[in-house]
Amino acid sequence: MKPRARQRGAALLTILLIATMVMAAVLLSAFGGSGVERAREQRTHALLAQASEALVGFAATHGRLPRPAREGADPGREQAAPCASEAACTGLLPWRDLGLPAADNWGHPLRYSVTPAFTVAPLARTSAIATKRVLSRDAGGALFFTAGQEICSLAAQCAPAVILSRGRSDALDGQDEAGNLAAAVDFMQRPRSGTPEAPGGVFDDLLVTVPLHTLYERMAAAKTLP
Image (cartoon, rainbow, N blue to C red; front, side, top):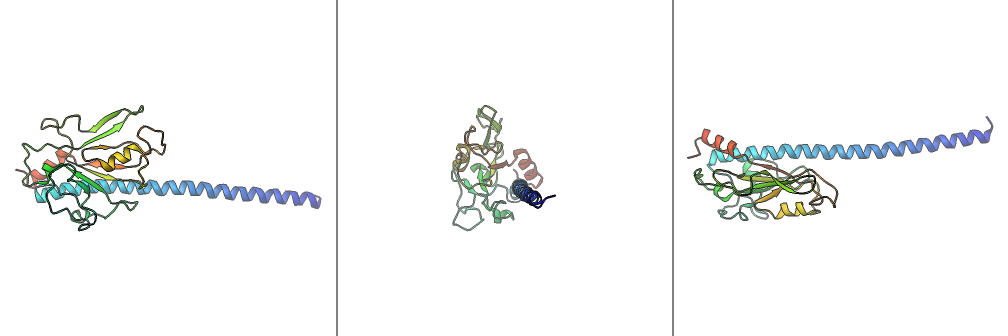
């Protein structure tokens, strides 16, 4: 091979090697980043399930669900004053009272909304109506209930409490995320979306409810439910 041809061949190999290394770095970054986010999401799902279980355990011991914690007050402790309204019973999860971490896996405190009647002991099972409802969207953007229904009643109960993670982003990038932050009764739970044009906008909130049947069953077993 002539010297000039060898030089061109070596230059081509160098370019190909550099291109391969750059592509590998891009792919590693993409897959590595998404893997990290998936792991954080899975751990936050587990934390939400743990929080729901801890709330049921609190009620089994105290005869009621805890009141929310407040920002700037005693961190992680339920507020001392009774919360008589849906808005007053919506705030932060009292993580210290429940023996839980202070934040989700993105460093955001978990939000918590509880039906006022369920924060009073003894819990009046024959008259307490669980009020929290959870909605989602179908493929066309129409809303439907995944927990509760249009009217909550003794015969058709909704959920007694909701625990919410703001997800990865702390910004209110979509209508449904902003709605969750302001909500006291109706909450949104739908698949994650990074598309602003999607119905409800960008969304990455995570949410669980406290199951009423489990709550009553555990409280009855602990003899804290009249």
